[in-house]
Structures are given as C-alpha cells and as structure tokens.
Length: 365
Image (cartoon, rainbow, N blue to C red; front, top):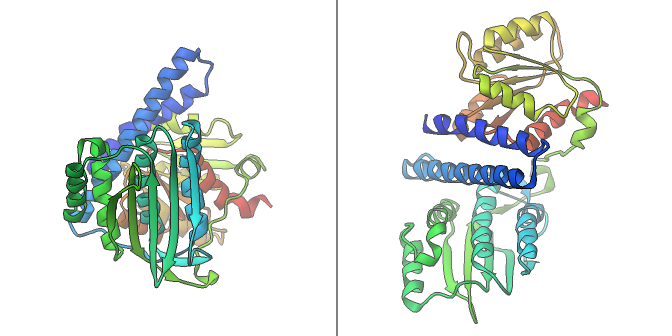
C-alpha cells in the first residue's frame, strides 16, 4: 500500500517532467525541470530501498535462480557509471578475472543493485584519480571488488564502517552517510545469496569494497534470453491499435504524453469493464492495463479478454500490467493470470516502449 500510494504521484511528477523536457524550454527552465526529474528519480530510489529493507526484515525477500550472461550484466551495469566517471575526469577500469565467462544462475537483479550501489558511492566520493572494478568467479563464488581513490577514512571511521557492515546496520561514518541505507541493503543481499560485503582502506587512499555471492555456472540453454528489438522500427512499423485502461486522469495524461512520439491509434478508458467492451467491439494489437480500477480490475479484465479470445479462436493479444503494485509476488501473480509483462509506475518511456516493442515484434515482421 505504501508503494502504491507513493508511486502514483511520482508517476505524475516524473511523467510530466519527461514531457516538459521535450518541449521548447529556455535553458534556465530546462535546468529546473531537470532538477525535478533528478529529484524524482532519487526519491524513487529511496522508496525502492525502503521497501527492499522492509521485505528483508519481514523475512519475505527471496533469491531468484535465473540463468543470465554474467559478463554482459557487468558491462551494462558499469557502462553508465564509467560515463559519469569520465565526465569527472576519472579513470575507470573494468577487469574480468577467473571464471567471468558465459552464463551463470543467480539473482541478476540483486547482483546489479549491489554493484550499482557500490559504484554510485565510489563515483560520488571520488574527485580525482580512478575507480576500478575487478570481477571473478572461483568455486561458485562471485566476487566484485570496487576500488576508488576518494575519501580516506581515519582509523576510527574505518572501524565504524567495518562494524556497521558486520552488524548489517546503516550507522556508517559521516563520509558515507548518504550511502548508509544502500550499504545495509547490499550487505543483506550478499548474505541472502550466501556471501558477504566487506570494506578495507585503499593502498594509498580511498576505499575498497568486496562483495561476494554464490552463483552456479550453467549452459547457455539455461539463460533467459532478453531480446532488445530496435524500438523505433517496431513501434513505427505500422499504426498499432493500443487499448489502455487507467482510472486516474493524470495518469491518463501522462500515458498520452509518453506515447506521443509514436503514431499509435491510442484509446484510453477509465475501468476494466469499459476496456473489455472496447476490445470486444474492436480488438487491439496490444493492451495496457492498470490493476487497481473500479467496476472491473485489471486481473478480471485480462481474464475476460482471454475468454473472449478463446471463444472466437483469436491469437492472444499481448497484455502489459501498468501498476504501482511492483512487489515480486504481485508481478508473478499478474503473469500467471493472463498478462504477458509488467511495467511499474512511475512509468519510464524507454521501459514501456521496449516492452511493447518486444511483444509486438512478431507481428511487425
């Protein structure tokens, strides 16, 4: 409930900020809108961290065992931070050691979050010198070592940070205050995956964090393949009929603005029953469904669409759940009850467009 209540207004803020950034603004106005967007992103990250921590403390956090390409995940995660480091004049190195090749089974989402946490802190704390990432897998243990030449802690502060990590708390030295919650969550993620997060001072200055977690090598057949079609080509291959249900009028406007650049035949209705009636009258190529709606909710609407398709021997239409309910258990429930994908609110256009392109790709060729 907390997630939904906060994500809904954040969807309004970030959606409108995105639309404003694409309008004809003066530089000063563009800078102000950029600050709004960046602050909204920061607030969303804090919300996600708090929800993760609540799930861990409630004992409801689970660890996935998904096949994925480890070198690709590491390169993609490092890419954005390397660019930011370069803008600050920092050297950035990524080194693959023993065992970093091919696919493994593990929890790619948690591994990416741990690495992102450590890299964001390293980039923020380092004003000169370099940041390096070393990765290796030995005897089923993935080690990610992130070194920087940033803030050098006193011996007392080093002991405080080491103790915070050992106890799994966010009571870190002042120099790491902004990272306390993320470090606590990263430590708990490492431990959930059979590993540990440790700190050591750098050889000459700065910090070294080493995160370990267990992974299992697997054949490529065990890897879940994610296809990234050329979004523009797919979404502009034809005029797709897009049918959406959203009861919040501001969310309707946000969705219209985010999809404005594509030449969709877009129809938005206010509840699940209206959507089912509209679909039966004129079937769509793809359906975007809010979940919590009056009259008929998204899950019920998806079920009725599937019944109608079977009765009329239709090819199932792709259905995407657009909702502020973004807990893993909720997402699995949506996917098991007739929906094909989930895009959380606040909606990011790149994420929604990429998801739509992936689902529409078979029909564009």
